[in-house]
Length: 435
Image 1 (tube, rainbow, N blue to C red):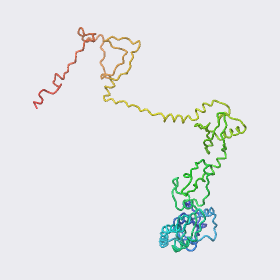
Image 2: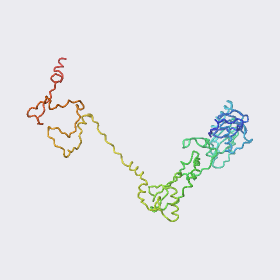
Image 3: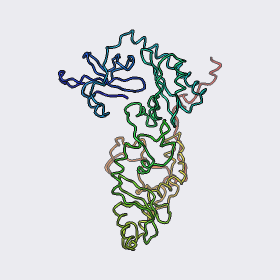
């Protein structure tokens, strides 16, 4: 039963300050008390309040103008029946209250044993002791009416206190115990709900929810209270959706209703229990219902006259077909190309697999340069070259020896290695002996 004072940061006049304070007790139970002495209280302060036949301790949960609104909401009258606040609890009051709270758990276990011995059909869920130790309240739940007069006699003689039996519903029992819901938040019945409304399965039907008891029921075993939160929005949206009780009659065949999107106002139909669903607007569905009522049959769900329906059938679920083909085919693994260890040599030796000579290419004779061949990049490429000698240059190239000029079959003379003459071609002889 958490509450937030959203008026606390506003400077309200102190003259007309509301003198009733909301006090919270164990299990989220709240009550209202009058601050007669105008004590300076803040949220969370322990206070000693007046209760019938004694006094009790609780915590301040709300004060100011919001208390007036809460009392109007719960229909509590501001009259003399509202009890008063005695004082702010001191350490002695808190110690005595802690001693009374320590008796609650053993009393709960012993009370369950007594109920089993008597044989009553009731479930004892919680016990709350008053701070002065003069009274104990037993909270129980039962499906039928229970005669617990004999039980009160056993409990009074066992614990030597005044006994009060209070029956609570299963929703209130879950709220007192607390817990976490499937939404990941604290239970609504233990935080802010104080009046429980009846929840029926029709609320789930209006919201197109599956009637699965394990999903629709809460921790109390009853239908979840949150089914009523959005029910009004669904009821207002359902006014524009036509009621389809039987298949729609079309020239392509009877169309059965498969699904309804309430807020988008779309309805999905299928021809003859086919897997292809066709989305139709609610206004169009209402027109088809009127035509069927007159005895007329439209050509399809979307057109009254006969058109090329093959494209509609093929394009209705084209996205799903593309996804089926995509995931049904196995992916082919790409082969990795082997890395060349000697990159320069591999690039030189690589040649296209099939080379066909160009047609009408000019024939070349051995020994003559080919003008059509692309120049290859050599190590001397890019360097400055000497100018070509003119015809008047006295220096002329040496003539080739006889028999070698223009004959490609005669091998050329190898170039002499100068390093061998100098003795650098290898290690010296008898090197090991000299060492």
